[in-house]
Image (cartoon, rainbow, N blue to C red; front, side):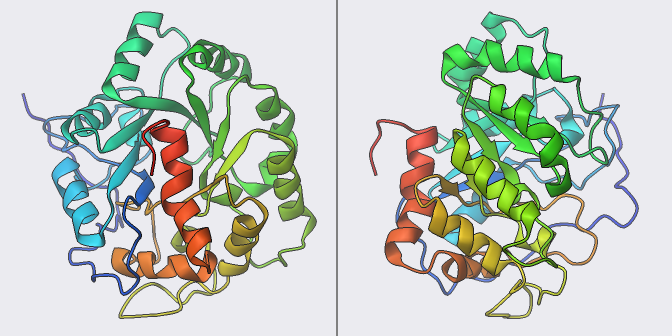
Length: 306
């Protein structure tokens, strides 16, 4: 039986007609952070969810992939689906090998269930520490999950606020897997790049086996301007932070669209202009190729070459 879902009040739907980027992505580009939502009548949203999105299924994601000139996707489990990975796994399987997945799992998951996810194309799990999005599991439960996935060669994707790193870094550094940090650890871009909070994040990345997504400027920006209406220099307040990460860690940075941009409140960006943001933070062809092709291929499709 189908179920009717009403979007959360004020929900912004994804951009219906993104522009074609002026920046030509290098062949083999990977969008290393995107999601699918439902569709809800096929893949119902979790009862415990803290938001109800618009539908944004695999067909729409793959159409955007082709419009932007992206070759592959990494589809990250959305919190609105809880630990039911069905929509994400369905999209990965439908991609013909052009997508990988990042799942949400519970500590009680079995080895057989993990091997099934691995066969489907899942390569990591996500630990979300944003209280407005999820009720964070106790650290001992998260550590148990990390221990179970380590033999598969998976990694842990972590999402946290910059101010929470001081409390989390010891725990995160103890996990037996590589880490992938979403959206540069959400720095406060009203502060200088040399601020102690962002410096802590850089040194945490340096000391541990960490990959960093220089993604979501639209989520981090305070002064903009927004990636809309042909804006060629969007999110200038975020650029110095992303550029610093690309310069310090050229072989462990990743990029993603974050489509369909859940829980944005101020504006919904033009995804074509988000592609045009890339050369502002990865300014040389070598930096761009590492960020967009070499690094994500090494992490998600090892051995396939670039």
